[in-house]
Amino acid sequence: MNLKQALNIQTSLWPIALCRMAIGVLWLFSLRWKLPPDFAPQSGRGLMDWLLLEVQYPAFEVYARFVESVVIPNFILFAWLIFLAELLVGLSLLSGTLTRLSGVLGLLMSINLGIGLLEAPGEWPWSYAMMAMWHGVFIVSAAGRVWGVDGWLRRRIKTSSGLRWFV
Amino acid sequence: MTQSVELARTRQAVAILRIVLGIIILVTWWDNLNQQPNSLYSAEGLQGLFNWLFDPNGNGSTLSWYKALMDATILRVPGLFATFQMVTELLMGIGLLAGGLTRFFGLAAIFFFFNLYLAYFGGHEWIWTYVLLTTSALVVTLAYAGRAWGVDQFIFQSRGKPPINILW
Image (cartoon, rainbow over all chains, first blue to last red; front, side):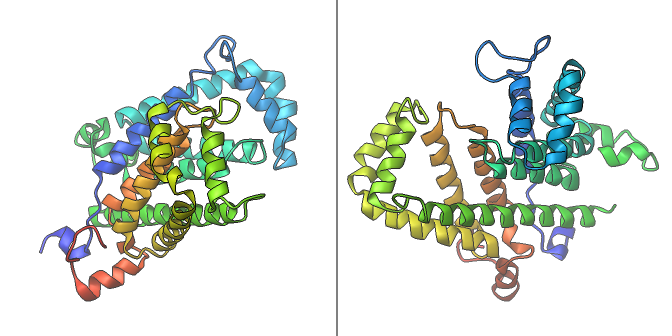
């Protein structure tokens, strides 16, 4: 009896890897309307518009006050942080590199989006719940090992190295 | 962490995905049922939905071939299809939540969410919602997600492999 039979497991990892790449593309696509230097598209809502929505329709007052008093006055700084975080998470998930790290970052970013946009008109909170869940799946399943760079990296990192968890 | 522990945790994570998908379907089902002035699961409600989907002042969906397909099929019998949709969605939600006949209901969910993707394509709604839903249903189906924390686990233990692979 092999391991899978013993554990009665038939987990397919390649669909999870496929979803990993799709969500990587999702993060990269979402950069289109928040490109530097002004982080706004030629038409439609830019990053500042979404931040203002979070202030105007707060689900949690303390969060709205934080966005209003800290994030918006320092918009360029936070815009760069958001842009770079989404770019790195997107590329990491797409390529399957350090997937667990990007899973953690993506999870936090998804929760942040959900908290901020919970009461915003036209937003469906379950979208952010699903995104958070998927990043949780990537963390647990180490989804970069299938069709990803992590599979290659893992064979080259020593078992005792702390970096091994990230791949 | 051993491979066996990681595989088991992956299966549990996918089970959580299945459960949340089931909850999403059931919550949305309840909202649709109680929609005003017409329940979505009525001839008027269904017709109203498709009118709004392809209205440029509504969602503004752009797949004209899909609209033509809907006009030629389900919108010929909207009342009948609305009843069918109501029952199917309810069963789908319960099946995924409980993890019973998961692969069967997962397959139905893939079909259902992909249709929503086509219906909303090109409109104002965030289309990635339906990509996430479809891929979630795909993984739940392919990963036998009912065999962890679900009814399928007991069915498999008592009856073994299903006669048709698409059941549990």
